[in-house]
Length: 167
Image (tube, one colour):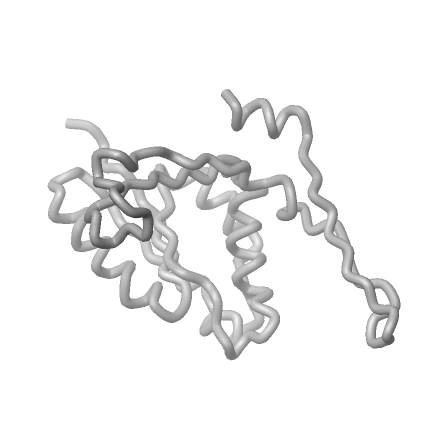
């Protein structure tokens, strides 16, 4: 018998705490051999001790787990959402999670704003680069707080990043 797959679970904030337990029930009902390890990374932890991710957190996720199940992040008690940025972008960059794969399917024609479109007509996948573009956070604010204030955001894409998404 094969070893169970180890899944790290980061429920996150808000609705994440409601949705992720249900997702775990679904995984368990599938009958697959899995081991779940839950982590308290989120706004509550950040507000309690100022830690977003433990020092070895990303190394541990990479070394010890086959998958990571992540809920929603963002909490109005942390106005900058620094914890969400450090956790989500940290996973993307440190684990090189470069592909954001989003399947798109129409489940019911009544839910579609396009006239005459049926479920058979709408079934595709959007793949977005997840570690470059605006995610490199290159930019800033010039003359902040004045009438001449300007926000600049650079979208940086490497040949490697573009090619691996295309492939």
